Image 1 (cartoon, rainbow, N blue to C red):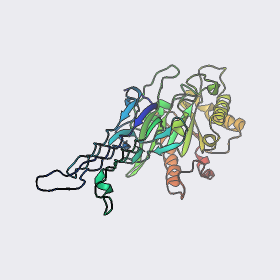
Image 2 (tube, one colour):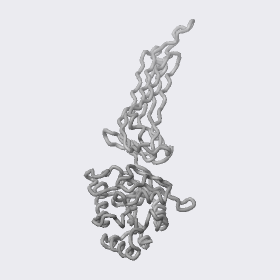
Image 3 (cartoon, rainbow, N blue to C red):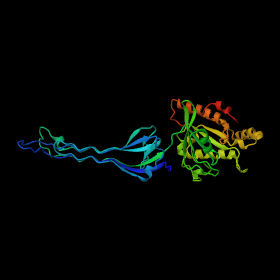
Length: 360
């Protein structure tokens, strides 16, 4: 199925039914009095979060969603039937905004969460509603109130604890396939990953976290190079970023240190809050380095970057060094979950306990 994480839709609630002017007409009952009922309420449009969905493709092609109008009132004290509500099922993590004002309408963060998008209009009053001791034969009625209508912008941000970022062919897809149940496409050419992938990493009994893999980021992405910043929004809800670096590039002219700095600069250009998240360096493909030079070369990279945070050395293909990475990552995620304010993306950077996790 094609991955779609943006859509614009038009939603319209139903109008309320009009009230009725009617009088009781029955043999041998003169002056029967008013018996016109009220109109029915118009249907509303609701959003429902569904964990079984992972794309907004349904709303790319079905853009107009209207609820039914309420029925008008009738005689014999009969009120009009209310219009049926409609529910729009959306993936968990969907943000709904007003397309014209950019005002936040709702944010679906839990499975089964239900949010009102547009409210149906109330039904009008029939003349039964206006009778009184001084107005015994009212001929007043009111029309139904119109339902709300909006143009909405839907934006999907996947819910993940950890995000993978790095240059194309750094090994992000290989890593997520090695540590989780995700099965992304893996090939030896750039931009193999064209849309985000989610995987659940099992650390132990009742111990797991969700990791997200997004397409590779390159220098100049803020100007539209490569796939640009199109998918960086999917990292904004993560608690930790794992920055994968190709420690043994095939091209001798490629400098891993320059690549790390380029990615960091692109993050700051896109969103300073995203750049402020905890970010750990993960040097991948260390099995391609000569064993006698491995520790020295990685230490030189860290020294040139003046890196003070945790860093790891792994080989996703050979499954080397993955266990320490997964365990330390889970500790960081679990600490963030127990924080008093886990929704804040800029929670404190962890202490240097993870810095001992050097070359595996």
